[in-house]
Image (cartoon, rainbow, N blue to C red):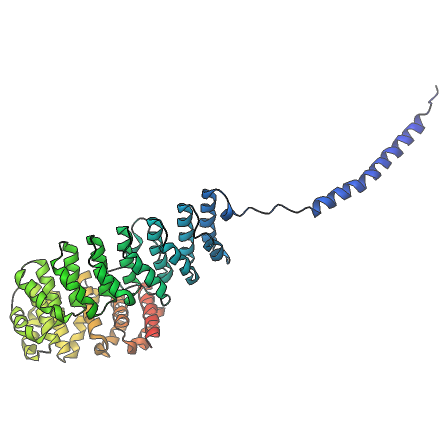
Length: 440
């Protein structure tokens, strides 16, 4: 049987097939080279998206990333047309806690929407204090109005433009913004705009007036405090009480007659006692007979401020009786008042009772801290011995009191406590060191 042409065909087929493969290889290489040289698709920047929800998420994510270029990229959106995007950008910038973000906050403070303006007040405070926002409550509510907690340490001197912008918000159309602006000025130490706070005490909304009073007490002088005197007749209980206390804290001498009359007309009420306490802080010689009389009363609410006032007036004729009463007294607040007075009269070992009160109840600790702040450098050197006390409340409280009072001579003794095993003591010592550094 003939095998016509089979081997040749196979050979030809094999050769042709191989030739086709060889011819195809250059075209495959060329295609691969073309693909390699083609421009890759650039990732879409969510901040420039036409969709607000995409921009909002991109801003939030960028803030969380803490990327080096985050701030300038976010700042480009401070006037985004969508309010939710602006809020997201604002919060992202605030979370970076970079002072370079302050100009953006100033822009937001002038935003057309009250919600943005309100958020901007929180944002600028966050940048200057590095305080974390609480989950549910208002951000500014975490800052104390009293002496039981130290005021936040500002990371830098506040730009005057911030004070000016906050002062402008005291006239905002939104009452919540006005209230927050007053609170923020107090937190940030805006002494330069105290006159604007004084004007805000005439606001139609009680909460705004109350916030303005608190801020004046924090940043104002006795001259600024004169704006509080008319508020003794305010219709709001909160405003009246804050004004009464503020007049004493700022030692507004011209308000003494009003406080005296207020006490005499309301001697048994809580507000009357507040007026007496403020009168005792001002401690005028003309009120000496009143204080002498009240120092003999059984009512501890009246006796304590009377004792304090006589101490401030240096009425040493009371020393013997005060020592006797100190020994017999069971009321801890009165014992502390007697100790404070006796120390001022020159019996220095009584500082022991004053300082140890820092470890007592919240009210006792507040009382002792107020005394120590008032004594300031006069409490040295005895007070420094208590920095070695075993109770951390005493160590921390003493750091806070001496630093708030600006007792720079205590810096060397407080410095080692920055390494204290108790976190609160260490934090108080670090804060004190920063305050002392600024005051030198």
